[in-house]
Length: 186
Image (tube, rainbow, N blue to C red):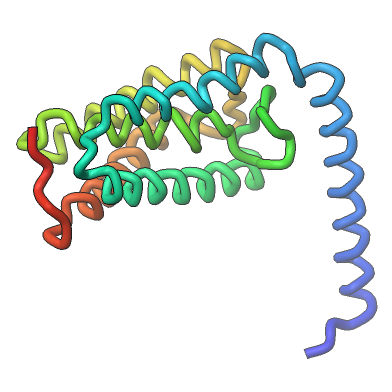
């Protein structure tokens, strides 16, 4: 189907506005964010948890744990991008200004926390672990990043996140603990 010229022009105009806004955002990032202490903290928070996990992971379960970690990354980046796009929240100190998600949270802290909670005490009911994961993420992590000035909740409440984190954990746990893999052992 061919897009009518009038619609095509409106799409082009909207796209040019986005390009212009991104250029302004990137200039601000380069002048005020890049190499600031906040930027360095975000870089550390994006890498250190993975190094810690690599050292203390259950080595025989690495592949299936990474599958669960990548699931958490994929879903959290999608939801983060969606929330930013819908003006529910935004971020002030990105490691790279080209992603609408918060790299330390989506690519590191969230999946690594998930991986550690899954591995520790594997016989504890997943729902209890999901509540622990959700409480840490929604009521400790999000307020901490808000307090640090990294995260700005515009039309969002931590209680919404709480529910999402429970579902996210339970799906990730189910994926990792599928009978297609070996059992997690202590």
